Amino acid sequence: MRYNIGRVLLALLFLWMMTGNCLGAVDYDHLFRQSSDLMAQGDLDGALALLKKVPTPAPGEDAGAFVSSRMQAARIHASQKAPDKAIADCQEVLTLFPDNSEARNFVAALKEQAKPAWHTVLSDTIRFLPSLAKGALTTLLLVLCTMLVSPLGGLLVALGRISTLRPISGLCWLIIWFFRGTPLLLQLFFIYYGLPSLGITMSPLAAAVLGLGLNYSAYLGEIIRGAIQSIDHGQMEAAKAIGMSYGQAMRRIIIPQTYKRLMPPIGNEFIALIKDTALVSTIAMVELMRAADQLFNTYFNITALALAAVIYLLLTTIFTFIFEKIEYRAGIYEHR
Amino acid sequence: MSIANQPLLELKNITKRFKDLTAVNGVNLTVASGEKLVIIGPSGSGKSTLLRSINMLEEIEEGTINFEGREVGYVLRNGKRHPDRPQAISALRAEIGMVFQHFHLFPHMTVLGNVMEGPLTVQRKTADEARSIAIDILEKVGLSDKRDVFPATLSGGQKQRVAIARALAMRPKLMLFDEPTSALDPELVGEVFDTIHTLADEGMTMIIVTHHMGFARELADRVIFMESGSFLAQGTPEELFSIAHDNERIRGFLNRLL
Image (cartoon, rainbow over all chains, first blue to last red; front, side):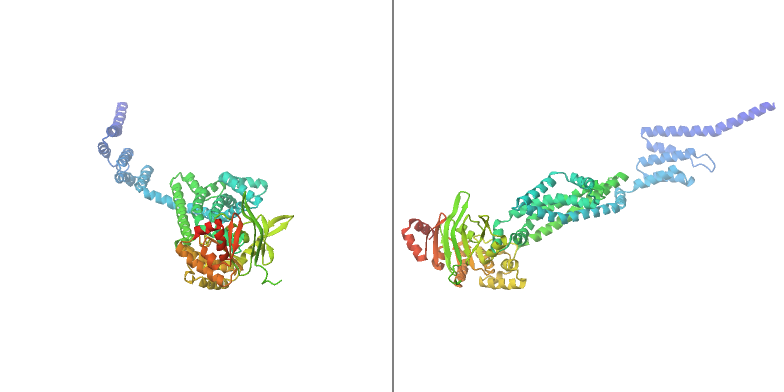
């Protein structure tokens, strides 16, 4: 008898547990399945209504179904582009379980998504700008150095080309032939990586200015030669007729008249130069292109490249404006 | 030998060839100090080439140039004739003024700048000295009011007067005029002619190559008719016109001009 009573009590306890726990679990299971079916049918509101039936658990009660239902609701609201409601769903979870990482991450992601696109671009810009600005300064330094060196080199080469002394004109022809005939990239490699094997080493900046300077001297040389030869021959004769030497005539009469004619093609070359400095990134110089490339590879963020494009445009625009002003000033005697 | 008796310029056997064309063919010419010489003749007769040979703008193949009694322009080296050192040629040119048909003013300099340029750069005078020389000469050619403008704004006649002033600023001993009025509109010829006339009255030695018969008739001590690189006839204006009476070629040329 005792034995029977014990078995009955045990069975009753088992039954109670079954009805108390498993019945409820089966219930929610059924509910989740139903809501999934409704979602599959596209009835999101119906699914939401079902999920909301899962009540807030009392303290100590099992909260698994509650958390699952609210998070599912949050996902549905997010998919309905209702981030506020989705956040409210998560908040329900968080009031009970402030440390629930799923809800917290979801809220963070929703808040991130809720920011407008310009906000993201702006924060990227602020993040990238310091290193891009540093790169841009290096680019500017390269451009200014080359702009200083190459017109002088170009003038020398041009005067050499029109010299009646054959060895000098031949040498200058050779210089132009070589530096216009080979890629700038190759020249930079040769100077930076090749010359050290001949015992000549130099800093990346020196190598870059030398490479760009030689290359642009060759181009400007031909432009300057053309401009000098385009000046009416009578100017040279008139200068000689008052007793000027060839050098005086060139310096005082011929070359000053070339300035106006030189500005458009030289401006063109200098615009190309601003962009050609990007090639210097291959010889260990962190200029604008290299800086943008580094950011792009680190963050995989296209904003870095777009910003670099904007800075290049800014530089070329500023220089175009300056060249136009100089061109006008150089030709002022024709306007009056 | 006194300088007064010595000719300012003496050309002997001047010959200039362009490839197979002989532009000037063995010309001899003596110009006395203060003389006004006018060279006329058809286009391509070698007048301009002869004039340009005098200040070495053309290199001659044969002949000698004597200026103030010394041989100038060329030196013998290893039995071969070469142009003299550039400095010597520049020094010669500094003493001989030249005016071109197309003015060749320096467009990037003001009128004053053009006239100052020779004294300033060639004679290395100070800017103040050069300026006061230029101001005086511009006054003389009647262009003081155009001092600060650029040549582009001047008329052809004004340009040529500035060109004359530019040459005069060097205080030359001889002036060469290469068709000074040929590029001018007819109504502008007069002012340039007057300027040259004033200069002639002051005793400047000058050689004028021209088609403008006014120069020959009113200004010349001697007129030379040149054709095919040689002097066909020369003499005072009256003499030349009487020669023209008998010489069909000269008469034909003058008739076309008059």
